[in-house]
Image (tube, rainbow, N blue to C red; front, side, top):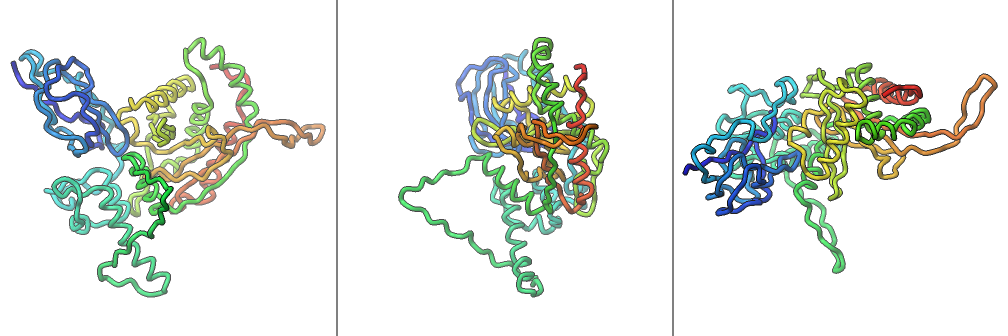
Length: 428
C-alpha cells in the first residue's frame, strides 16, 4: 500500500488560490477514479475536484472555508503502489493559456514585488495596479486572511477609506492632508420586527465587491442605438428547425450578436483594450464574455476564447455549451477568465435596454434588449411608409478614460449595422 498526496489542482494561468466549499467525501471513505472529492471556489467560479486515483481517503488536511494555494497537499489517499502515480491527464484543470493573455498585474520582478515573503493573489495585484497602490503601501495594509494574507476585501476597504479624505477635501475646496484618514462607519440601517435579514452568500459578496470596484475605477458612459433586426429575426425563424436537426443544437440570437460584436471589434480595435495605470493594453485576442444567469439569481460570465476565429456554427455550440455548464456549476475556472469584451442580454428578462457596469479590467460592455414588434417608418422609392418591424435597443457602457464618445458611439452603431444588414439568403 502507498499514500497518494492529493494536490489542489492548477485552475488556469492566473488562478493562485481557491476556497474549499465542501468535502463531498470524508476520511475513511472508499474512492473510485473520478469520484468527486470536494467542491472549491475561486474568485470567478465554483468547481468540483475529482479523484485521480482509486483508494481510501485517510486524511483531510484542510477544512471547509479554508483558502488554499494551488499545488498544496489537501488530502492523503491510501492506494496501491501502481496507482500512487497517476497519469498527468488525470489531474483536472491543467489547460493553460499563453502568457500574453494574462492580465497585467504588479510586475513580478523581485525589485517590484511588495514583499517577497508575502503572498498576493492575482486579483489583489490587479486591483492594486489599477488603483496605483505602491508596493510599500500594499505591504503595510493589514490582512485578515490566513497567516495575515491580504484579501480582496481588505484591499477594497483600504481603497474606499483612502479616497474618503480626498473627496471631502475637494468638496470643501481644501487641500488633502497626509495624515491618516479618519474611518467613518457605514450609515445605520433601521430594521423593524417584521424584516428578514439575509446574509449574502460568497458569490453575491464577490459580485458586489467587483461592481463597486468597477464604478470606482472606470468613468462610465453609455451610448444607445435602436436597430431594425427584422431580416435577422426572419432568417433565424427560417433556418432554426433544419439547423437543430442537422447540428443537434438550437440556434439562439446570442451567437449572432457575438459574431456582430467580433466584426465590429476588428473595425474598432481600440474598444478591445484594458488600462494599467497610464498604459493602454491593446489586446491581441478577441475573447467575448457572455453574462449568464444562474438558478440562484447570481450572474457568471463564461468566456468564448478567440471568438473571431469561430464561424456561426462554432459560436452556437460554444454558447450553448458554456450556458449549460454555467447552470450546472460545471465550468472550469479558466473558462471565466481573460475576457476582453462582455455581452449581456437584458432582453432575456423582458427589458428593452440597460446601462451595464463594465466588467473590469475591460473597458466596454454591450447590453442587448428585447426584440419588439413596433411600427417604423421605411423609406422606399415610392415614398415613406409605415410598417411593422422587429426593433431592439443596444446600449454600450464604456470607460471614458480611454474610450471617447466618438469611438463608443461608432462601435455600437457598427454592431447595429451588422445586425440590420443581415443576409436573408445566408447559408449555414
